[in-house]
Length: 620
Image (cartoon, rainbow, N blue to C red; front, side):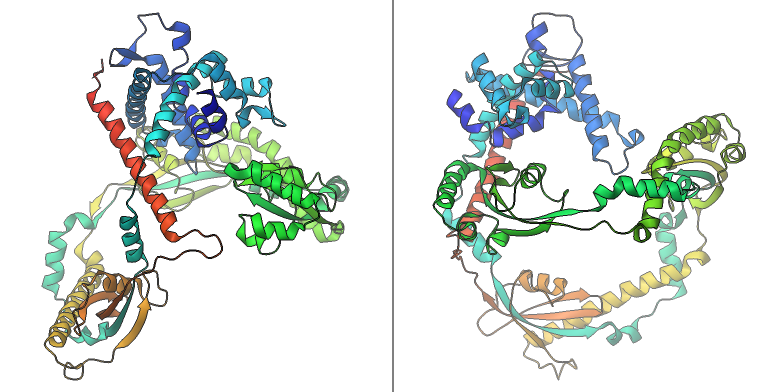
């Protein structure tokens, strides 16, 4: 067990554990502290073991924060609390089932195993050594105590061992993978005959009766949603900055302060990148050969898995700070010209980095930067003012019966927006939280202002309803032209399909294009599924047709933007299964590995479902 930990602590399982901590690990550790106590409210019981309400609520809160973090514009009002609670409870039940299964199989870690696992995790290391302060701080950031974290690791690690074992057991027959690859690499040769929409336009007729019938049959599609017209005040950091005056003395002082940053340093680097799993042996061999006098460029071409830079001897060109991974950048900017770094680990693998050249740009004259620096300094000062003004606006708008008072008090402009529906409107009413407030009972019926809503980066809005209009049925005359266009488009497509079907029938009976009154074929040879230069809808049709019989094409059609295309499939060309001459790997190897991974995931999902379906679960 301990050897497994040493082998896996830098790998996938360790990363999975850290990733799962945010949602799942924090719920189990307290068992070690309060294991024997009873009477705590539970939300579910799994095979006789309780999931406590305290643990459940903790994870609900963490999951809510996670979902907020994924939003482009975080807004708690957009969270579906009922769905979150359901999802979390289902997850906790599943995790309890898996932990019980691991325990039943006799899988466990002792205290020494836990210590070895924790001390070897890079998340808790400084300069390659375990750092207790970082460990404790990281655990506290998760909202856990050290004891809780250790117990969580104990339980989750063995579950992940079962998971990894099942997922790595997925197998795929070589011939199945080869057949799929041949199909994927298949090409087809076909001809295309275009029938433009103009060929049937003279036969398209839409009567008033057709329009009225469509209107009656689809009445719900012609209802105008309820709408509001709104007045609103926008407070933004940018508008505050525009009103801040910067004197020449202040500008010159700011220029002197920024001089160090304005003189940009760029470094030209070369690197050799090896995959993390093979890093120790490969890096050692590279370093020995560098010491023996072999060129960095040749070794980059031989070893580096960064194939793009490897062709250039590992050359990455010039770059300043903020471009590379943090660890890579720290190592690069600590080197002297010509020096090669010690091994540097990043998410891409392990690097050897050589600093080839350093260049520093001169500080541009103040005249060239004056406008940019004025704006920077103004925004910097406005940022301090923004928080204060925002708080004043929030209080003033909450207490006021309209927006006139707050606007006058703070020197802000009242603007108007019309036709806002529950689906939103133009900015700033493209923000769902602001729209929800606008249609709330307090604002819509009570006549209050909305709360001050942050609709963007340092942009806040407060609004109120000026006028409300109920949903209503649109008159036929208001939508007549739209309906006519819809019906004309549908009728055109119907006639085009009829024309294409008639051409196909004639071709299958041996008639020529001339006798069918059509144009000429356009040929496409050996086209792949992702071929460019051909309408994707035509490609899709060509690859959906049956293989042509000897000397007899298969026919189909595809509606396009300009009309319809009749497709004649002449040949199906089998795809090859090739080996990459440079790496020795084949597409077949990669596909087989991918399919085996998918199969392993399916098997693990089935295993989880079996455990869940056989567990005794009760919910109060």
